[in-house]
Image (cartoon, rainbow, N blue to C red; front, side, top):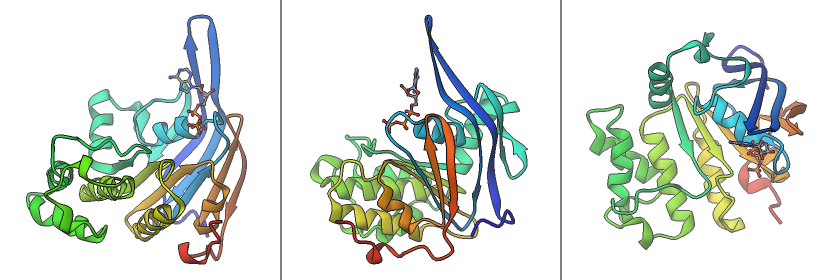
Length: 240
Ligand SMILES: Nc1ncnc2c1ncn2[C@@H]1O[C@H](COP(=O)(O)OP(=O)(O)OP(=O)(O)O)[C@@H](O)[C@H]1O
């Protein structure tokens, strides 16, 4: 239940306009919502509705045209580019649809690079998170020796290894089959904590069933925000 007590990130009256020559796209139009720690938030909407734009703004990868984004009551968009980089580095973890692993590094090295950003004991931290996603045994493999689901689990371990406050996931199972997707959703849902908020962007309405909070976006606007008092466990959903 979204109580406001644990609000970590707050978007207020966000609009984002892209200009390519004479062409103008209003990707987001007066969007406001909160992200809470200890919660799985799902941003749901059809293709082109503005989900990735919202996620990029939450992650400090892009700046809004108007409106404010505050992290723990601190406006991230009034900061310099260097401070915004620091925010991305210290606070945010990203999981992408196509994993974005570095192909000439091993599984362990992909995770260790991220762990090193935060912790001197990066070897232990990397192994801890690889174990968490059940891939420690594959730590010396290269990404092209893994399945899609395994690569995505490595990318989740990489994101978690820097112990982010906010884990942002853009269509994390978009390239995976139903069974593998369930495994990924379970890891992501289990990654919420009193210090960590998890946000999943998707067009799959079934994912909303496991969320604490669902933000429905349509045509660049928030259509509806739903707080699930009793979200389902991943195993309880009929994924079809
Ligand atoms: N860099 C950009 N330049 C111009 N237009 C853009 C840019 N990025 C996004 N858009 C446009 O903004 C709108 C919202 O895009 P966005 O990627 O946020 O939607 P989405 O809901 O994530 O879609 P999808 O599910 O297909 O990824 C779309 O009309 C898109 O074409």
